[in-house]
Length: 207
Image (cartoon, rainbow, N blue to C red; front, side):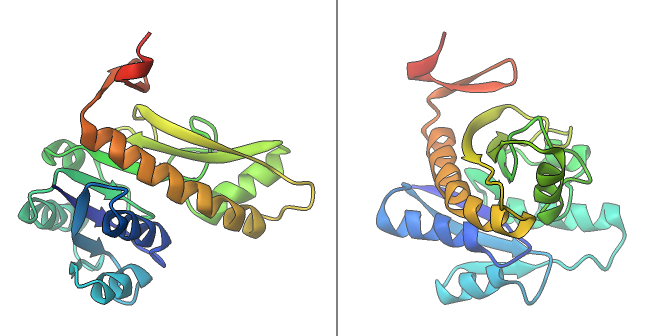
């Protein structure tokens, strides 16, 4: 059984989806550690509720020291996979390279559209609405030193309604995000994939 380390900043709904999938057997792994940068985050509350080890690392020290401490916490759990589930800190490239386990991230748009350092949370959905795009969605990708540029594991597509606001689009996308994350975790844990260009291909879909 693989061990998962999850980094989350907010309410922790994606973390909950991962926990539920582990407990139901949809993911053959368990969450060993939850790390949050906010003491009062919903992610920490959910970790406590499920008896999962948790750590809070608030951003009150120098950037380089902060990420060195983060790396130390991640390594302490010897994870098979590190998951960024709404973690609102951009992990610098040197820190990404210092974490030996694969790292995956959930982004609330169809990358490479609406990605990058300023694109997170509700700001992504505001940009989608403003652009006039008829479709949005979510992307789970492998984390590399370049922000939101790693190989794409999978995407889910959602039609943008004429009456959508950034908030309603965000809410409607949540179930797809949770589904995408569970599927992506299983792909990476299986080891039955290859990276080709900027895509992750499962063994059955190699061409």
